[in-house]
Length: 461
Image 1: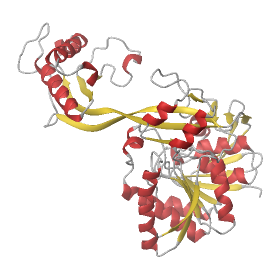
Image 2: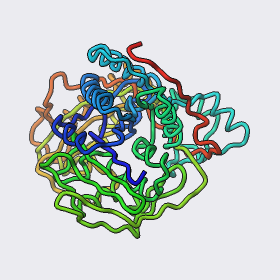
Image 3: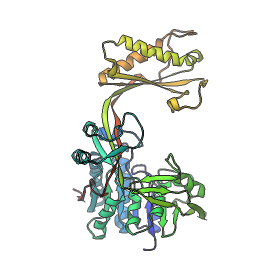
Image 4: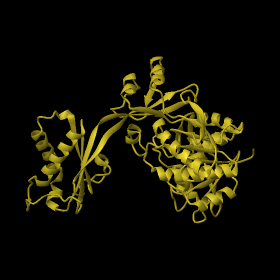
């Protein structure tokens, strides 16, 4: 095989894409349709709660188009699904696939690879001497994963690399399945699996996959709700958008090569890292960019583990002010409000709740990392954020904090009617359970497929 052609219709299953882009891409003869549908970008809540951050109807619409195109073009599809990517999330997607197959009057056989990690399997690995080191130096994460961390977690997933998908593709080429659906997976893994199976160079495969896994975000104008097309050879790869209203430029491709990384030249992957320092980017034609020259450095194989634990329940209140005296005194006011709340709630242990304020217009986005000190905004938005041991405690603490902030006295105050304005009634919003990542570690593996179970499922079930 001299080249592999891959169509990625959208940045995330459920984000949508134009049918016109799909039709053009299919005319270009892709060998495979690939799309990612798992992420931790939206935080720990969805892994803990077992819910999805994409709407079911949007996911169904995308999958229906992908499955239909795959069947009609006689090419496989690879999709990771479910958002957080645990089995409970995937099962909700499978219900949609059942509906799709009935509506299209088709039979569909899928190789399903679970991204959920068995707690018993993981504890056995740790007790036998395997080490899982935290990815970031955050104090609340154990430096090395413990059995207690595993027990505390609600559920655990892992970013599978391309290897389990490559193995599942064998079933496609034996005529046993029509495509592959995975739970939590490495973003680039769903794209990289097919060309890696056919021996294309890892440096080019991973570099192209890094660029195209987010669909038309790598094009101009960029969009997460449109697709992109990649063509890889043994010496280079090409990237272009099917949508004629978009184009890939050297700038857009280089920018996406640097996307989401603290070191823009290096992408850490399960079997090593991609180094794009030596890569070259050429405007191949008006809408296409050619890339070559990146390097891939092999390292011991690791998978990233993701787990969450329940830490409490949240209630928030949103308010605003444009009183210059209030704004200039705000740091002192907030400190005093917290002390008043603690005093009034002495019957509730202090470790049963936490009160935080996010002040937009001052440092609401970056917090203590905000480089602009002592700004002078004409108005501020304040989010009162309370996490309590129970929802009732969170509700009570938030209500008292909101009322105290509303009427708290400060130097230069000219009115006692109220310090803040509320855009909504009711002013307080019980948000529900709060989860935090307690597992954010990498585990070395000798066999990249070991923790990932695969089974064939026929739809409709």
